[in-house]
Image 1 (cartoon, rainbow, N blue to C red):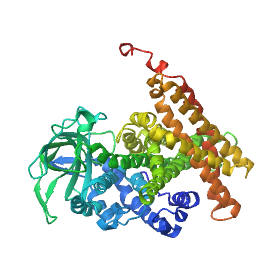
Image 2: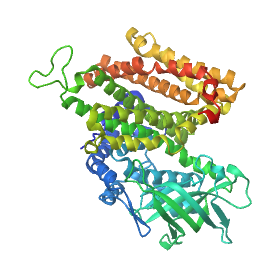
Image 3: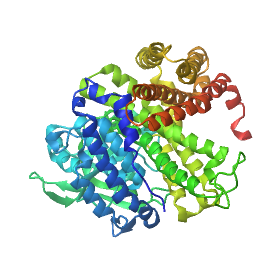
Image 4: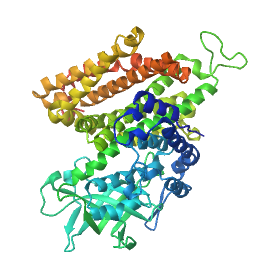
Length: 593
């Protein structure tokens, strides 16, 4: 059976050696000294490995069951949920006013990676609740915050987001769910929502649904959508639970993966709801939740890649197959371990260089969120807005690919359920789809984010990379050759693609849209290249200074060199595809496919 060990040492390296969080002037970061963050990460790692990971296969094999309108979660989930709640983990970064611990989001992100790697389906219950609570925190009235947030922060009540309907997914302007105004200021919601993660379950006494619906007489399309709080049980003035609301689970979807999470069809039959934010401004309120969710989903891609890699590495060291072509490495055994073979090494290095680079990218993104929210930094807010589709799209695409490569290390055993590797692949697959399919992320990046604020934020990113190269270059010739020169070349490819979009996109928008997916991946590679350059510099300085674990830092440098030499040059391929334009993509008539 698979195992999981939290990568706390690597997280500490990124947080302190690379991002220097304790030295940041972001409010709340001064408290994030290495000993403090280590204590939190070690405890989160312990609960991940000892409580959550053993239930991962249980959730996969048992799944959820709908019985008389109630969803039964897999055996052990409820007890584990109580342990997570007792530790205060759901409210780690939420305001103290509502029972949270008010720690920075960057720390919550590191903990979230561990929980998701250990058990993605389970962690989604609290993850969706966190997103719903964030939306209420940002857009709710004082009364709504006092009514719902204390119970949601503790996860005594959980939360959901209800967007998709049977006939519309991405195009939410087509939705049919109606919200009829009532004399008391509430609304009656009628309609059906599908694909609702954690929509019904037995682990919380109430579930707070955030539901998109249209108020009759409002504007057409997406401009007429509003957001509503619809509790499973109505809440009385004294905070106690009242009557069951007109919302029910009609079905649990049978899915490829994340079986331990209840993905529900939700029926709203005149359910009482309360407007969250302004009328017809529902998408603005929902995107508070969506953007947080997209960053968390990108982290899920990393998390599944990490746990799959750990198990593939153990297998490669243990499984005896063939002999090393340069000489026997295991003379006392009938064969050498898999890890001696260059192609297995390539496979494992692909995984290792991705997961470590992606971890740094994700934590840097979380730090930008803290900088935007805690320090009111609009430039940081603009930069993370630009990077959000890259984090979500690139990390989930690559994360899924890495779980497949981890499976491959096992050969035929990777295809057998007994070994547990297929679950990582199946669970990772959804991350490429939900919270906005990755093709939509690419369109958002090229169609909206590049031009946002007159292109200010993408230019700021290029300046960031350029400045880093200029400040670092010339200190070490080997480092320049191995890290900075590849990063410079990749950044130039990315800028060339942006220039192509500017020149050709105006003539024919399809020239830009046909290249959007390649651009998202190109951007992702440059971001990981930038993070590897920063990690390489930190590792080199630690080695030069004689501090810490020299083997760890030497390994970090070797892994970084691999990424820069073997992965980062993919930007040239993506650029060639982009510059081929829309003609090869659009050449066939629909009837000729």
